[in-house]
Length: 314
Image (cartoon, helix red, strand yellow):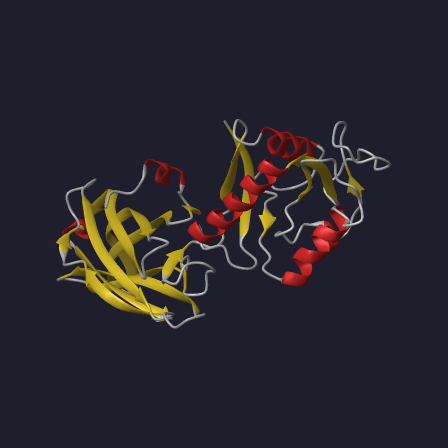
């Protein structure tokens, strides 16, 4: 599988989405001889290494592909060949490892290795992580073999996602977007937009919301933001933000806030990252939100502690 275009931005750092990650690292190989007690370099090769791992939220298998290319080099180093072997450490097993020996030369030619891993976190309620490693061997008939390793430990597999009685694998640190439609739920969209503009988190990667599955936390978030004894206008329901299913709800501290037109008297419009906002919105918008939340958490395999963003679409 060809790495995605955004992988070019992963030089020296790991970038990802919910089902794939990329990291471009570097590797230097030198050949040398010792002459009269002094080391004499006889060749050198600088290589780019593209590490690309990809999975699926509905499958127990993921891949780790590696591509290596010498982009600069000289001398005996370019007479070498490169090969690789994939290994694992954690809750998985190696399904396939394929990187046969290939000549390092010519420059700017890519050598591909492919590996696949199967999770062993398959029993009901199981959650497992696995570090996957490529060990690269650069062999040269005159100089022997040099080895180096690169490791990714980005995928989490589980059979613990509510509503999904299957095993799947995701990148748990990626904050997937929960997107509400402005045309489908205009009152909900208006409330969330104003809440985020007032400083409450959830709109960006730098300040996402954090999933909670703790029933007591969710109940307290709702009770504090939308007290049960507070009257609701006919056809309206109280909506809270951050979502009650997040650890950033009002149980985490701060004060309650609201906005003009929300039908909540005696509560001011505040700003800041702490606290929660409340607004009376239509019951249909509230029901739409509940369905979207449930589908999102299942589709993205959102477990307790996973980050996510809340966005407003068309």
